[in-house]
Length: 88
Image (cartoon, rainbow, N blue to C red):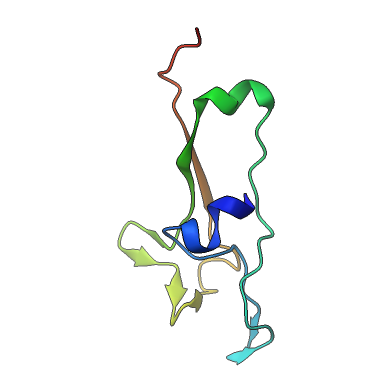
């Protein structure tokens, strides 16, 4: 998970950013939410197949670069697996 977030992510660089009442508590994103795959599923995984969403449809989940808590305190993590692929 760590290698797929931060600079390599198309979404936020983590899944949690502590902000209380508009006052920053920390200056960086945390990675609390993760996806675990069993070894048998690794052949179906693509390196670009995981993402922390910053919007759902037209609705942005971040406001001014931090989590908009009207929706959740953690943006969702999405994992795509290539289930069409056959194992040799």
